[in-house]
Image 1 (cartoon, rainbow, N blue to C red):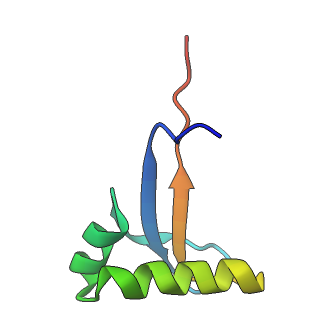
Image 2: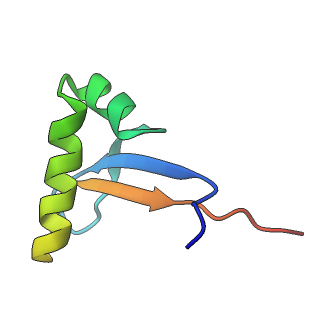
Length: 67
């Protein structure tokens, strides 16, 4: 499995649109913007992923497109 070329962490709205409120290059940067610890952001994301439930934290992989 190759490492993603670019990953962005987001905190999104709690509605059907899930629009980004905060965006950062890492979980640590996102946590700093929100006044939280990086562990709390990662933990909430991982627990929701394991349970198969929605979370307001997103890890978005952005693929580079070759032209």
